[in-house]
Length: 98
View 1 (cartoon, rainbow, N blue to C red):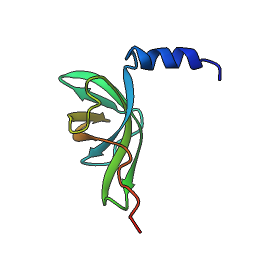
View 2: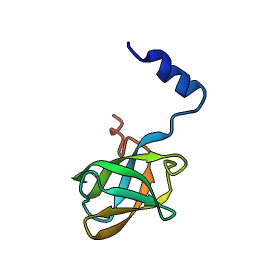
View 3: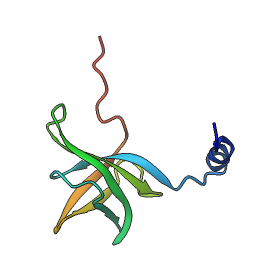
View 4: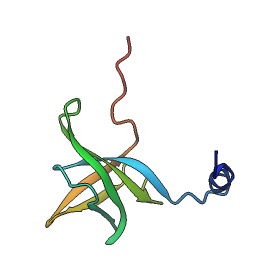
């Protein structure tokens, strides 16, 4: 595909700086809400929903390194609220084993 070499080079030389991650949040947040870490913007929320399976709000976000690691505590600024969130590995829940 077009751009394949550029993507392969970025992966090879560890130049990928933004990662798609999951967030466990205290309350539902708006898309494009800022994700803050260490007092600076570390990324943004791409989508959010109330998970029926996890019985809590979750979100997908793009975060810059090194804030993308599972277990990192971040804050999400949604409107005039600042909510605590935890970075988690994707997928949020795995399918049950049969």
